[in-house]
Image 1 (cartoon, helix red, strand yellow):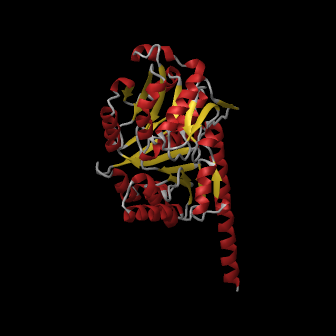
Image 2 (tube, helix red, strand yellow):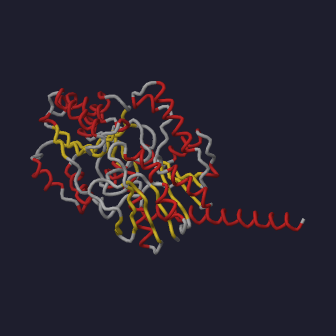
Length: 393
């Protein structure tokens, strides 16, 4: 099967969506499928390369607003590659339009993976003007409402949000993202090495890693640090933070400075993914203070590493978190501090471990591909038969 993936970003760009499509494309390529990806050309990448059997085609876009330019500049490349494709697979948001337009023009089967539906959160989280929030809600709904052959959600929460936009269950499916359990394995990680390297020996270390996006609730964790330090004096936050979006990164840095808590935070740039389990192993707890999550890679990876998790009880996180954990109210620094104090005292809930595998994820996508392509073929045959009958008459 020849599959064309259309997504605004792809590795080496960092993000959860990038992980999903990288794992999916490479996994399918290993099974013998012909996988092509159309994505943005980011600094340091070539226009074309093949990685682990996946053909990556990068579209040159202006540096400022690259993802928005991709919506339009990707159309010619997508059209050319889609001509010989069996199926087009895209994701929200900026790859959606070129994928759908080309699929309609060429009468190709097309599916979309929806990671999150923000809806009213555009105004609540983004602190936008009323007009801007309504515009983004309208555009999100318009994108999601495009008639793809299948809408794939990464959690039941996201599927429920899709229902609110009018996508019925016959047109949707839930396929959870996967975790590399060979990589995120507690017995294969050396946390002591990281503790010595960072000078964390003897401290209670709680960790946050990922993007500083507004939905991640990171500022509430930063605001909680003085409270945490009162309750757990010998504690420090291990903060592995992506630098994009840059304005958010700088906002978090200013908060750390304004609170005068530099000595309570070990701020690091993102580490290679292969090294990340060592850093998780070095901590006593992982904090996921999100205000919204479509899936929650940090939570799932921490649980796979058998680390206690302090997480907001919101969105998809109750579907993902397992093992030792403490639920907290989202957006409340006091709740985060209380949650960490419970972990420090060993007062956690403990539930049966949940596993999310890439093997199961990839198999789920293959089943959806087979279903939608079969349905498309049946529709085509029915149309041809109808046209034949019309001609007879």
